[in-house]
Length: 410
Ligand SMILES: [Zn+2]
Image 1 (tube, protein in one colour):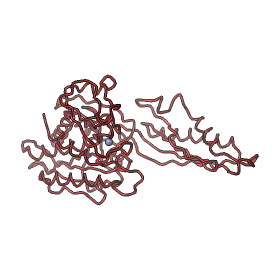
Image 2: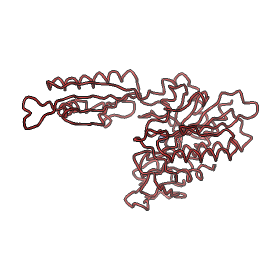
Image 3: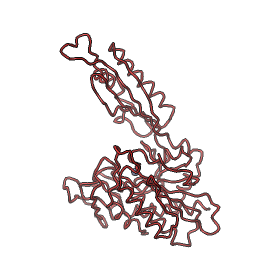
Image 4: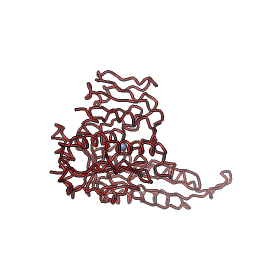
């Protein structure tokens, strides 16, 4: 079944909405506001009277309930408008490969960028679909404009098909998810939904309701710098202490390179180094929040051992919470997951349920009072110039939204 998702998607990806971590404004880049205004105009044209964008670039809109179902608790759908800062999003040129024939896809603006079904089972499984790629020098922006397009197509369907019975449906498009700020200024009270779903996932059927719990730990080593020619007995090199510390961290287990599934890790990922002062940032990740305290104890002990081995070196350790496993909230609301399974099965899709080895806006929204698991939108090869999406998957994602609106009122 076709929706307007593809046509909308091709329009949205041409607007550069790359997020910028260096910016302190919200949204971090003006293109996101441009897309926000376009979406509000399209919603108003569809007849969604209250669509608006707030001062921080969040788009919110309501599709009123069918007559007699106004009392049903409102259900929300959320997608993010920004794209990853890791890859250019300027002058995205989407290419539709109609009825994909299963051969390698060479992207014309850089022939070294090749999508090979032999290396990409998800792509091989979509032979016959209409596949959309970028042209080789930019990302596509399917993450998460596929989610935006699917929600917009579903909104159109809900408004124009009077035979679909549903409760109130709320929509929110957020800025700056890719730089971890998507939930920062999300006005949960104004959104006023009992629960919501993000559409920001991969292949058809994907249903995600477990994420990591995440902290970031900062270790600061203070050494002493002096002219290296006259440093005997005086210099304390903080870089050497930090190197000892990093070398002492686990390496055959508890690392990103050696873990998958439900295994957690500690990950030293950033160093600002000088003889006088060296700072090491370490990610702590586990599905069980209590394990983060064990990880902190381990990392802190190694940092102190390294400092103790270098007299004159001082060390401080600090931890900042990032997000928590949404399952801790969603376990109290099993009906939210059950409805997603039911909606998919009614469309002939078998739910594919996997833990997210990362976080989503939903990880934080769930703890802000809005339980929010994640659904597929058809996105693949996130943040890469090899990003692609199947038009048929976007249509299915839109139909899942419509079906969920129906299921939630029954
Ligand atoms: Zn995303």
